[in-house]
Length: 273
Image (cartoon, rainbow, N blue to C red; front, side, top):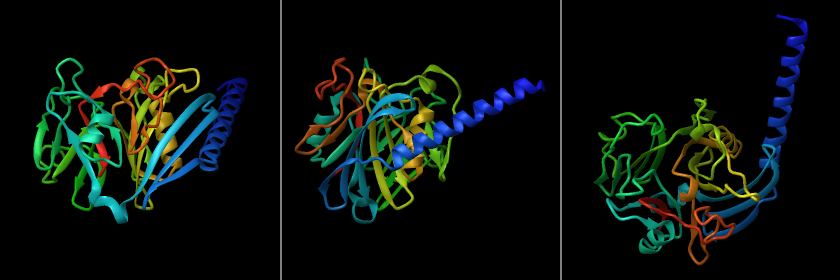
C-alpha cells in the first residue's frame, strides 16, 4: 500500500474513533432532564446540539422489570389505525410507544403480532428488515433474533415481529447500506438493559431542531445506555411516546411542525399498564 494512502487511512480511523468516543461520552454523561412517573418508571429527555455532528432530541422511559414486568403489554387492532395516544388511553396505559410496521392503506400490522394469545395479524410478506422479535410472557420479556420457533411457533402470550435488530447480547449489529438503514429518520426502539430495565425510546427527526438517526447511530445510543438486546420499531411519522397526564411528550413529525400534535395513526403499541 502506498505510504501516503496508509497514513491517510490511519488518520481517518483515528478521527472516527475520537468522534465515537466524544459521542459516547456525550450520551453517558448527559445531564438528562429526569422525571419520576411512578415507582420504577422514569422519563428522561435530552437535547443534543452536537451528537453525531447533528442536533438530536431523545426521549425515553426506563421501566424496572424486577417490579413491573407483568404490567408490560401489547395492544393492536387487526384493521383499524389509531394514534398511539388513543391506543394508550383505551388500554389505561401509564406509558406507551408506537409498535411495529403496518399497512397505511388497509390497516393492520404487516408483520406477525400476537396479543394475549390471539394472533392479530400474520406476516404478509417476508422482509429482511423484520429480523427481531419482542416476546412478553408473564414476567419474562425478551428481544431476540427472529426464528419461526420464537415467533409464529412461540407459546408466549404476546409476540411482536419487527426490526431490524439493533443490539444482541451487548454487541451492536452491522447494517446493510440502504436508505432505510443509513438515512436519518425519526426512530422508535425498545431495549432490555443489563440491569433488568426496559427502555422505550423515541428519537425525533425531519426538523432543523432534531435531525433523526441512522440505525447505526440508534444502535450506538442503545449500547451506550447499557442495552443487552435492542430492536428498532416503526419510525418516521409514527414515532410517538405517550405518558399519562402529559399525552405525547416527543415531537412527532407527521404534521411537519416541531410540536406534540403530529401523531400518525398506527396499528399497535407497546405499553405499561
